[in-house]
Length: 132
Image 1: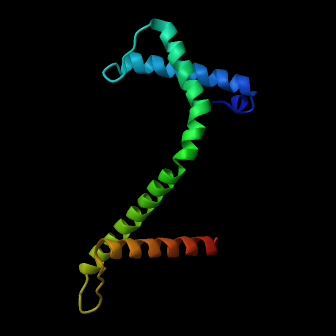
Image 2: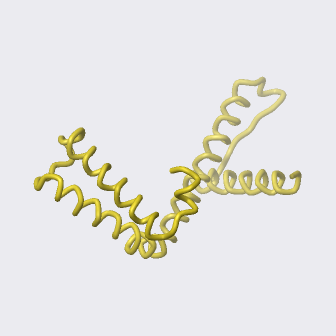
Image 3: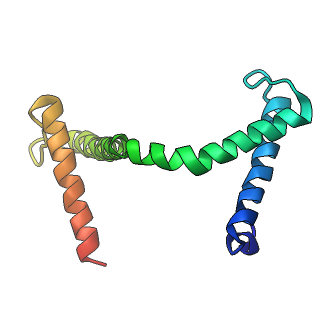
């Protein structure tokens, strides 16, 4: 979208979204027909595009509010997994070093990994915030 459409009035923005949804439905119906099939010609494109636009305006905000806890959980889980992989790489590198000089083990099973990953992640985040 151009800069003008972001400053456009609400009805103009809704019409732009409607037109883009109609085009999207057309593309899905004509180029991904293995997954998306419909009948009804151009009228069907407009009806389905209109429904998608209305759903995005009315239903999506409600779903976003209702599913916020799930989104937060998924985000936190992804962050923990990233930090756990980071810790695993560190452990793997340390294991390749001379064990008479340095060792590193994470104990406590899955919970040990989660605790270490969370604490390292929080610590790194705090350092990043403090050093800005």
